[in-house]
Length: 315
Image (cartoon, helix red, strand yellow):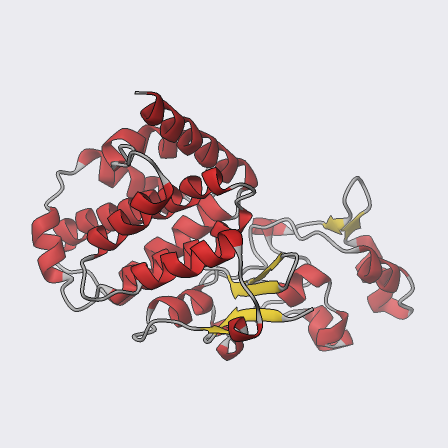
């Protein structure tokens, strides 16, 4: 089956010990069946160490060590499984992360997740609109055809970001719902959270007065950061729509997510008097870790958006 992927996809390379947010810390790492079978048959001291650090209850996974570190992450923040057995013997999740795959009837769509700081850097700092490699070999139809049109609207640099969002929302919902952060901040506060840094940003947003005009003036010339963020969300999620009427959920999610990271950026700017690309990347990385990589959080948001769309149509 053919695979489609963004033009930055093959540029990704894990920065290993240089990463400030190691994906081997703080996450329960599940082990796929094939890797588990291999680990169970490794001989010698390393084989014994492997089996002693695997939980076989429910879904097999590595037993996290102190400070929620993977037991095979050494003091140099390098992987001992990689060093001892080679990259091909890493379990599937470790080999794939931060890659994601959406399997469709006609093709597979691959991408990089924003929760990884190096992937976020590749995606968000890209100045030119991203292109999909391999899409020319596919005969898109239905929601994929609609998604490709959405991407063209979001990449139309003759318009402001809000104007581009209005374009895609007009194509997918009868009436644009209220997607302001003032309305949705309590929802974000109620979600499961992993990082105190995210909690602090939500609190800062709650307690600060927004000056969007000053922030947007400061960000003039850096709109591509938001363009890439929204395009990433559309590429990753829009294909999930089962029916045409579902597409509004994912365009609303892209718009709401933009509103959230934009408004957090505005209050960070107001507090610091500056807003760097690194500030942007960290906000978007935290958003991805906290929202995208929690199925429960995503489901809650999608359900709320579906209700909001339905409620506004009824009214």
